[in-house]
Amino acid sequence: MNLKNINININMNRDKAALILLVAGVLFLAFYWTYAGFSSATVNAETRYNDTMERTSSALDLYLKTLTTPTQAPKVEEGLLTFVEKSAETLGLSNRLGDMKPINVKGGESVSFRVDSLTGDEAVSFIRMLEGRSNIKLTAVKISKRFDNDQRLNLVVTAEKS
Image (cartoon, rainbow, N blue to C red):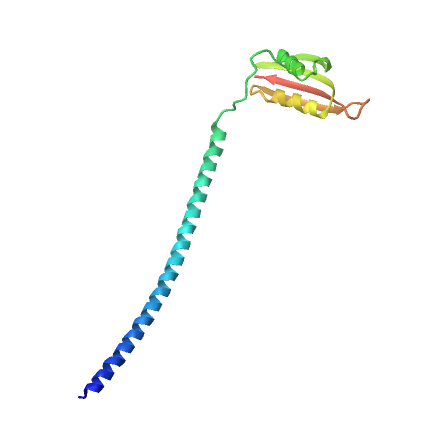
């Protein structure tokens, strides 16, 4: 055997080994970067999913809490007639309040009354004031336009206090 041939074979083997090592390194880096990219995307998707589930769970808890929590609206402790008169006075409608009639009802109080010549805002404010109490229920509300002024309303209400 010739030393030159051995030296050439060793150099060829080195070149082949370097080429194989280079190809293996490139393949490794390509697969690693692909794996790292997919892994990062998976972690991000899991994080978004967990955040969404947490928000959904807290929204469900709030919804269930509203279903089980009793209303915190104040109760009317005084008589219903007195409360209606005071409410009308508070809104400046006491001079337009009329035809107040108590009605006999089992287990509570009931009253029917009329308020004349209201603007739309006044009618809404008065109804909201009455409905804003937890133990008052409006059983009938009749709103009609006034015959002498289209911009004004007459309001006839029947309210019940339990």
